[in-house]
Image (cartoon, rainbow, N blue to C red; front, side, top):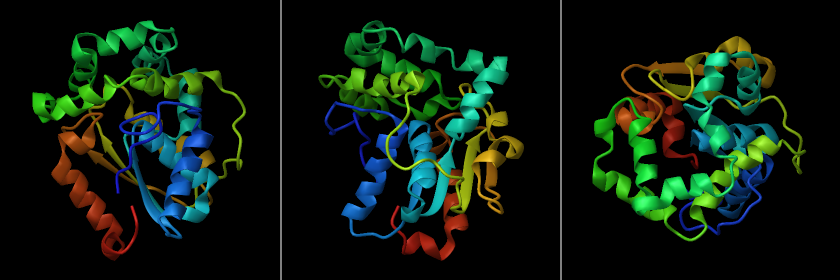
Length: 241
């Protein structure tokens, strides 16, 4: 199952958009489907949310798969210490400005969204016009751009989040990483940087994928699927995802 996340797609365009709320959304979905646990897979912001689900609601996560998304805690520390990563993430500062980024993204039938996706990819041929069209339509829904940017704005506010406090991640974890990511350096998932956020004995399997960038699942789908199925093994056919 690949649900629309809060504020995106067919969901209501209202917050809050802090990670604690988003993690509770995902945990609630697992329970609403009548599942005790699920394999949780996430990319980019979905990956940040997946980390948060595993940290705040470990009882619903059997395994965790992350695609080009550092742990939120490790990423926050990296922004303070790594000038190169801070420059890579500088676009997030623009997203804090009211109204302007919404206009930039949605003008000319959301051409800015298409440019951001294709321009942020290492394999730009992965995004023909017909693949980008659903993303453009989604952003043109009333309130959609503001909701999408709400994720970034909530992250910068840094308010104390409600719900269970995050704990070290104990679920077996696979990290797939397109090494040509122009937004996130591979150093953000160095084992030493992840260690404070992982339970003792939880050593993630990290699979670098050469020749692919930030949108690794679109740029190298065969490699991603092969690595995912190999790691999941028999669980791929019986666990919720």
